[in-house]
Length: 339
Image (cartoon, rainbow, N blue to C red; front, side, top):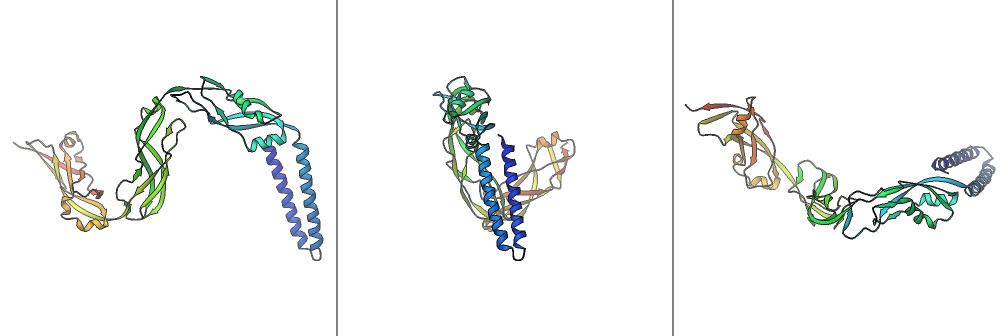
């Protein structure tokens, strides 16, 4: 017995049932035959159900072969040791036995727990022990047959939690600052070689659309089959505010310029477009002092095109101010050497 056979049975039963429904509709449309038509259909349905039951009783009492995937779970591990490679997620088992017993096993496959106490584990033996409760079922084949354990010294370290989000805000809305998580760090443990290059631990991606209010929610941490986490979830909090747009004109300068050099730019004024929380916009004075626009002298030395890209930095004390764009993105320059 295999899945296609079960599908064929289901398909055949659906075809017969559809025929019954059509026959019922046809009979109900006949004048003076409503009662007789319903009576015929009821008799036919009862006979059909009895026939199906008898078919199952006769056929499922026979022996069949079946392939089923059993979930694999990690059992005991030597103290102070950890796996460096994951166990297979499932074991494919070919079994044979009476149809009734196979259906029960197929619908509710038990897990196979592997104790990681040896270098190699015979998965066939583990499956046979697990299925010993299912009498009169023969195990014919298990894939994979042997599982190699890769063990290493276990260690632990504390790393910060890195929140991950994919949020679409309403127009002009955004986070005031980077969202915070609580706790902001967790302890991870596993094989030493696996922990060596981990300097933070990400959350699952928080996805939201049309956001215009603060966010406060629990979010799961990303899971790993080989690494144990001290927490499964954290609380993420993000303040959302409405922004407004402004523009500032800034004079372009040169950094680290030798005293005998003089660099002129064309144009020499950069227009910076910025956004700031709407309630903070009225507190901004002297907008031309908000930003610093400059070109490193090293950029000029290394350039071969005659054009360089300005660097724009926030020079104000307002850390909520964000640079959106600036124009022009490239400027021409002229070098004047003092004689």
